[in-house]
Image (tube, rainbow, N blue to C red; front, side):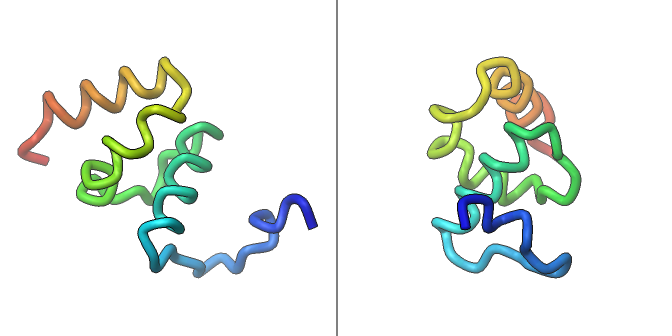
Length: 70
């Protein structure tokens, strides 16, 4: 099955670092920013920024750097 992620259960949550990287890139690049914890995004952003859409990368960098207190 090529698109196995479409069949994930609604309550599925990433457990490993590799799953988090895949999950974040998939959600961000498909315009679904709901349910992404800021701490998790900040933790994995250095690793995922090279594969993100360039516009989304700039916005997320600004968000993470400007609003460090959130």
